[in-house]
Image (cartoon, rainbow, N blue to C red; front, side, top):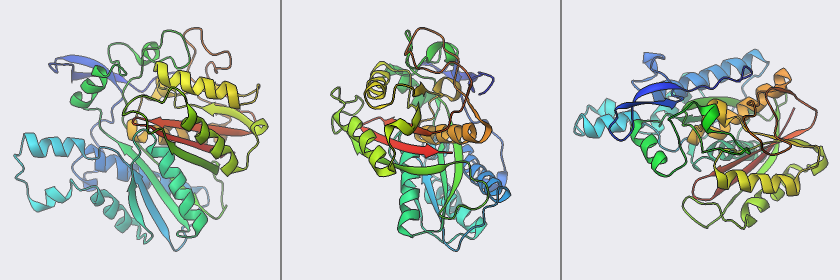
Length: 358
């Protein structure tokens, strides 16, 4: 990301007839066979395992009650497709259990001996923010001592990508940095991506954490299945309530790490709110040109990028490609002290805003 390179590659088998290559950022085959037969299960458990190991290396010690939250929208796309199209619904019971969304979670809890609550969170593209805020609520209420939060979306199959192309928001016919130019002229939409990303949250500030989750808010437009309410009342309220929940004055905010998918309606909405609510010296950026739109895992990927930016001192903003918002970052930028606001706007009206600090 710091090199300004996108994660996508040309993958065969896309388009109406599955006869062309498309620019998509997919999780490749591989992983540990013991984590199940699918990319989904292997990615989810691998990410969680890596996060736990990283947290321990930075000084974290698990409390008695460790919960698990998994942000997921479509789940086991590959296995369900195989179940219906190739195996006629006739599979051994063990294979059928692998289709259940509870299975990778149960296996992960067993692997680590965690006994806190475990559940899935789903709020479309806002699922990452929603999961993070749910984890914070668990911690604040004393339900758990720690939370392992994972967000997984391995759904960029030819069928799913085709329908997003028909909706006019996804484009796979050119490299992502030429297609997706958030808050700039000529942006067409977003490239599709896949990811599993995990993090550990704790009530005890031990070791060397990457960041602090100050607070946030969620709301719903109750307007349309795909479109943002053009009045922006509810998404604006979400930002305002997130500031209030976190106890942060706008003067302490340095960045809006936007949902920023490069679509006209999302970019307009976030730019208007940024200009209205943020201080004049705040800056704006989106990493979707680099990582793709990872759907249910999107905001979690972007929160991880924010965490690494705090940790390493550099924001991995993509290079500007066209005239655009005057406060849009242009390429990697040194982090200034202050708060980063992470917004996420999910299809169907899901709004979420999280405030993050070093």
